[in-house]
Image 1: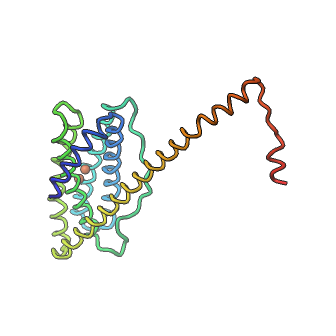
Image 2: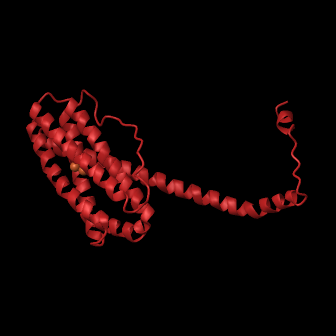
Image 3: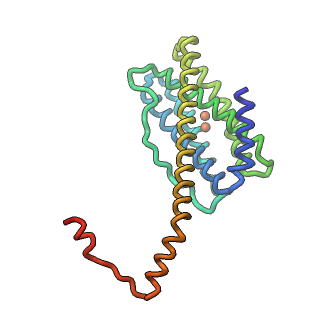
Length: 232
Ligand SMILES: [Fe+2]
Ligand SMILES: [Fe+2]
């Protein structure tokens, strides 16, 4: 059901919002920033482990996420003349130092699953000639591997399976809540823009008439002492 809803929402986005090349480029920038952010979180997890094998695996994993960020940075230029702008994030650790490391990996696992299904749905909906499709298909192969890898790492860390399932559910709810907040913020921003535009267009004829009257004499009088009097 979740996969079906995702396919429908992706197709709807592609046929409406993403028809503009600029908006498609903005979405690619978001993907690039998320991949680059994933590198940072993996390095934070790596720093908390003393197991050389686990550290090596997390480091290799982070290199693949870095490659995904680069791939998105490269394909971004197919939709715009500009270089991809740097994303400014206030980065917070996923979990505090006293929380078990496996919980961070459970968070990464859910992110990998979501990325796999989202990127696959987008790639399948794009035309064969679309440059983003080729990039996504390459990335999806890695993401599928990361889903298995993070599940294996959780077992290696001795995370109790029942607790892991509960953590997955908690992370999924938290991600949905964050997505809902983001979409709510987007809707409020759009509404505010529409209201300001309506006020602007309603006031424009009046302001135009005032400006025209003032400029009719080709000499605008301005009382420079007005602000001074107001503060007295
Ligand atoms: Fe990735
Ligand atoms: Fe990944």
